[in-house]
Image (cartoon, rainbow over all chains, first blue to last red; front, side, top):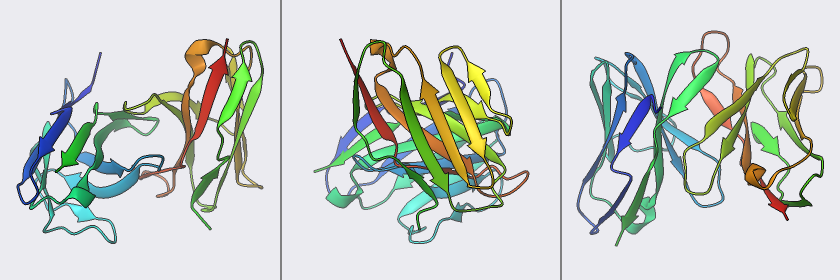
Length: 114
Length: 112
């Protein structure tokens, strides 16, 4: 069964609106979660590392004011895409690692901004 | 040079064929290596870890050459269900790091 649950699986929103994506760890506590973005035929690109109880660490080129990350509990991290634009349309995936050998991914969220 | 590079593919092979995927990584300090499988519009799922001595899991064999910074995946007796994109993944953050770097993936289509 899934150990990381992501919601929603897909969303369509109007340009200028904000969208929140949730990532939950099931049956384990994740002090660190990761947010990735994947454009068609491209690799997963790490956007940010979400740390419980502290500020997220963003990768170079990722706007922290546009992609708001909150990791308020050990089982939930959220990514909010603010003032979404069509170029933000992508597949967003979260992950958490229980141990070094494997990362578990959420089901992904396909965002379409129209 | 990209951090993790893979054969661009796509690979179209008949059922029963043997297919090999190659991957190179740029960070010599990388500690952990993996092959993930990603089906269309789905999240990646771990196929197997890659160990220095090489490892096998059924029809799948993974090998690592640290000197050449090269990783491979061999699939024997391909099945239709093997059709997917195979991602080479490297933990490039050093020992104890949880940061993964993904290759672009190589798409495999197994044809009846």
